[in-house]
Image (cartoon, rainbow, N blue to C red; front, side, top):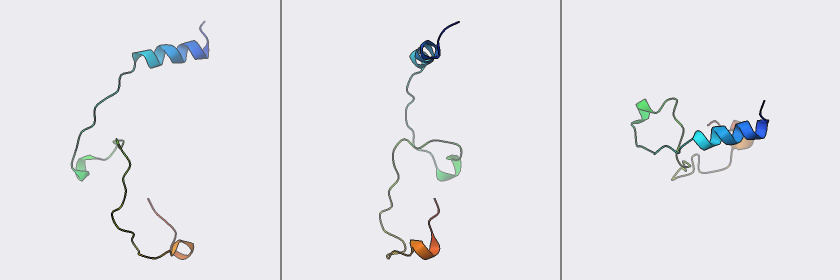
Length: 56
């Protein structure tokens, strides 16, 4: 039997990074972002989080 650390090393040695691609929003369900998404504008333009909260 091998240790957890050795098993982890073996698994990580088999992994290879995948490339990023641009897809339409409708085809993006179930995918992982390749980079952070940042809003160009603050909406609403004032702080109302105590009243309205945030949704991502």
